[in-house]
Image 1 (cartoon, rainbow, N blue to C red):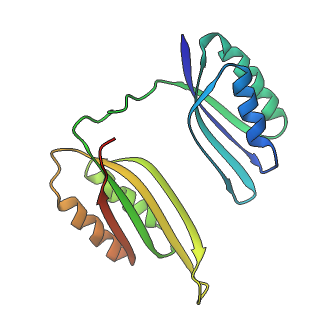
Image 2 (cartoon, rainbow, N blue to C red):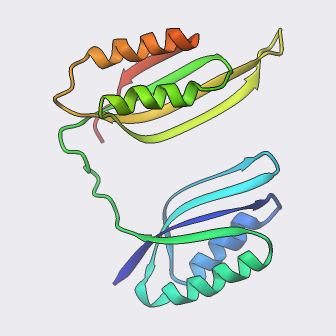
Length: 177
């Protein structure tokens, strides 16, 4: 029997941290099912869904303590794998947001979606400098699933929320996977 664990790690960025963490998982017979890893400021963050033999869970806890002794913050949470169609009949969409960076953009978009019962499955954001002015620009990409009984009016409401925030919101339907 296999156990599914969500493992998070944050700490100072350094060469070899991904290799070290994945070697630990490999030594335990673990398989990375999904992951996201990124340097955020001077820190490195790892978010991994790993499946490993149930009898190796205690060994993972020992290895996690070793990483913590080197200054990393680590959590390991047992979870269940979500079936590929966790929301049967829900429609997937991609939402892209672009515009001048300022506080509250993520919150307002998330609030607008939440109020309509729309589930965010993935969300990535970033900032970069405009080529000529050097002003900070914001980008966001999200994958959401929309309840089948929700009218299409949510799209116009989200675009209007974007106008209020002075950002462009583009919504596209995604082919079912």
